[in-house]
Image (cartoon, rainbow over all chains, first blue to last red; front, side, top):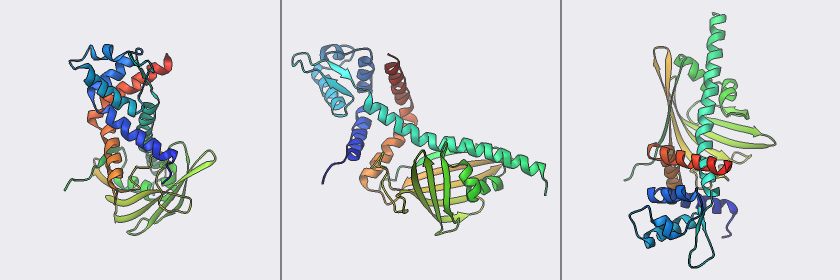
Length: 121
Length: 165
């Protein structure tokens, strides 16, 4: 079956959610928000080995959350915020739809109450 | 058997229950609040078991369509329906933005009256969903729920910082 862009986008989201469900990986992303860094620097604040950090980086890379430099020896990691932005936007949209609708319902109920009070039957 | 993930949204309205029920079940009123910043057109609203709610939302030149089939109606305390996104001919379709989102959500709305206010509770559960749909829904719920609040806030901050940089 031919893959469509939509399927790709859902796979991205699944991978993003899985990648973000780990405190070490979230910490790595936060660190990368301040600038690109090689594995050695990323491993330093954590009590884990460089290979363990590399494993986390691989998961983040597959999710599209980071990009790795081509330089084989250093391979500095760089944050790519787009997939995160997509996940945040989707979740916000679903929640916002209902809560904004209910804000409107609040206003409507108020005007219904007012008009009932103004015109007692 | 694992229980299905359920999303719960609660809200208290400062109005008697009969009024809230009316706002949900009168098509003219429903169109006025359902769907923020869109023009909502209600093509059909038959609030009875087996009855349909056919809803169109117009955004710019585009429309999105939803249908709901009521399975239980207990005036004025409970509405149960199966909600789906559809194409323009009201055939159930997956959401192009999120293809693994459950195509049909069992939606249970309950209304409880306390001191002239109405406590409303909205519950969603995937209906006849595939494993992928249930996983997608569960992931999203987790993100909206307790354990995720801090993580998502962090990411939102991070994105704002990046946008500003």
